[in-house]
Image 1 (cartoon, rainbow, N blue to C red):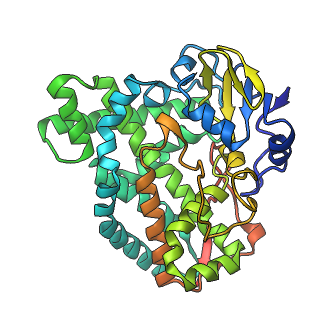
Image 2 (image 1 turned 60 degrees about the vertical axis):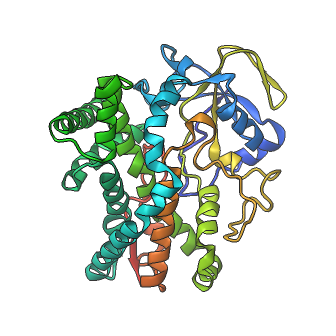
Image 3 (image 1 turned 135 degrees about the horizontal axis):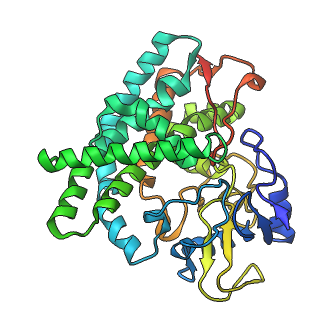
Length: 392
């Protein structure tokens, strides 16, 4: 039985063992740092099955010693639910993230991006893309959508690290940050009862008070989860995308020359960039299921490697090559099935706006330090840069 993850992540490089596993042993037994042994799925088709087939359950993880990367057991909430409970909660927030609603946010997002790039230009060169653009943009957008005071952004951005931490924080810090985040959202929700608003938190409060579709605890957990998840991954992906583009100057030049490629470029970068440093959120087989020619017994957990699935040679032509014009791109960067990222359209729009804005305002963008001097985050579920000094 292999230990998993296979090793510390190397920048945004995918461990070559995944290619061998997809070819020779697509489902293997692994042991994560904590919890019971699990199966690891590496092929695109198998990952889709585990994420999308009703025979696999997230709710079944509750009360089990779930395979995981931290001593802390994953908290409950929507990520630990199956339909119909999951459907009940997701339906209430999904309306805020429809393609139409997200497009209505695009002009405001572009205005925010321009203001932040103004700050970047004023600060340098060199200036830190993470500090001036990547971190504040998704935070300001999700704050506008939820109705959270952006003046509190430093606090909840710090607390949100608890959601993606494996070893970057102690168990005591993780619990303290989560408690702080939940307490903050609880106070904000309480104020909404006295001062109703039309934002998403206001809508959840009305759903709770009108017909008890949400319990008080569910409102707090859902709002805190949306706030944390609604910015944390996009904050990380913005510099990841820029880094990859600068490491592929021909593709960066191609994008500068043909701006209509921006939407496709975002999809290709979602496929190509291995955001996850490890696997999380195991699915439990509710009955015996054959996956990749292997029988997974009822009650056994399966974890999936989305980065590996996104490099599956049987699905993506020349899978290890970045191709911003790729036309057929069924990547799993936003997940799949009932737990497919509810904010996928919002993240797409934000990433498109950032790339468009940087192409407009800083066409000569480049790293301001030698690439080996960049410092990468560690001890998190996601890969990313702690800072990205750039010039233009």
